[in-house]
Amino acid sequence: MDFKRFGSKIVMRLDKGEEIVKTVKEFCGKNGIKLASVSAIGAVNKVDVGIFIQDTKEYHSKEFTGSMEIVSLLGNISQKQGEVYAHFHINLIDTFYGAFGGHLNEAWVGATCELVFDVIEGEVERKFNEAVGLNLFKF
Ligand code: ZN
Image (cartoon, rainbow, N blue to C red):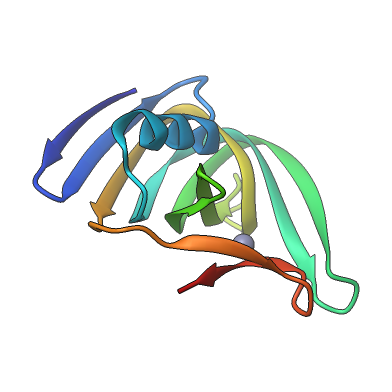
């Protein structure tokens, strides 16, 4: 991983073998980034994505392996009980150019990943909402 900061923006490169969610969370923790929007593109070789089943309030997840392009990764960084909370969604294509995606649990870089952070000065906390079954923004 390497990066360069330009005011409130950070441009980052992740390298082969790095896991995107873990690396970003560790980076934000070490650098005091508590609130940001994140976007990325790149090439991964293993992902674990989820779908939240709204009726049962359960996440179902599935792992995919092989050559995949990140068509779009969008998400945000917030806080939950003093910890960095990364919420990312990802859209990928496989070697048949079929698109799929979901809530991003884990993604391993197969070639490179190019991220841009827009850091927001401030902090937003998350709190578990029983009715919804998710950790929601709390203002
Ligand atoms: Zn999600």
